[in-house]
Image 1 (cartoon, helix red, strand yellow):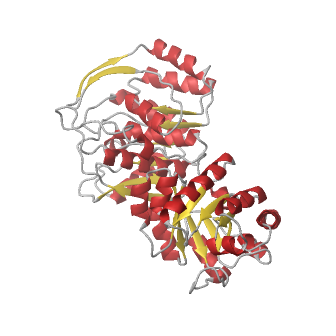
Image 2 (cartoon, one colour):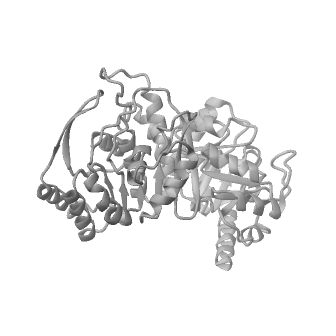
Image 3 (cartoon, rainbow, N blue to C red):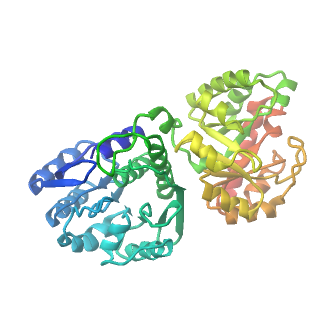
Length: 476
């Protein structure tokens, strides 16, 4: 419960709790469990659900059949948007927290109601009657078998997988299997990781994120928190707590709202040379683009000194956030951190996405430029949030930029598991042709000259926004 509360606080959502059992436990292990009366748990559930307008419920320790029945009855009486089931039966330490009598009601009644179930290896084995899980291939099979029990999504956590270099979890949504890797942190401070991950997923779902995005962000948060608390020394046992909140300013540098693929619809990329040519400041250019309907802004400034760039970026961040528009910095992680921007966009020759993620933390937006299917697949693996694909057409804003054409864009979109924004030579005359190719994951276009080399940035943006809207309506 304490881990749940800390995780939700760190991720910016309000958390109410219902206590099912009180434990005596420390870094050594679990010394005792005192299960609360079922009627009192039911009373707690009613108190919370009837008053708090709950979006998501996450379950933890459900130590008796009656307790599971209480939960099921409460969820039916007070429906919520999502139910995340963390089947706390066997702790990472090996302690058994729920008896075998609970298994049938878990399998037959609770899991079919769950939007997500998050077993660790021991719990997955327990649910599957003792099935041995010793490899990622075993985890993939387990995820499918647990999905057959009724939950809409399954996340089998592989943090305890022997001889694994990375922490690999397997996510299955009933159609696609995803192997979600993260850096394995060498630390004893892992107490409460399962509770924290499940609550973090619930927190992101409450913000409105789709399931897979919520899982990815939650994994990044846990990885970041583990890393920051890896050297703490609390307790004498083998498994200490980890750092949920001490680095709150890093872990929770949250955008004004969660990133959505629809943010990529009209992606405005600034150009210092064009602003200079038209006698505009970078802030005036950004303000005009937002007034015209830009849905996300990237600052690509090559001529400013770092100190001046940071100050200008801070002003632009303020402008964008006042309108609820995300703002990214091109290439410069240092400027993104200093200005509290929402993320960065990097190219193939820039800092690797995995390193950018470790520096920015779990919730920042990271985009990466991709021309090939292989680059698109690597972007997904390394933790990017979206892909910028191009140049689609020839452009003067980037020297020696090889064009991929509409066919190349299609290939990247079909290969990508991430949302894609098309870039390169796109303007009023050809934006419609880009959007009407109607391929999966293509969410919008990124433009430079069409906006910032126009006499009136706001008018040009409005025109392009209308063209894109018409293209999308035609596509539907």
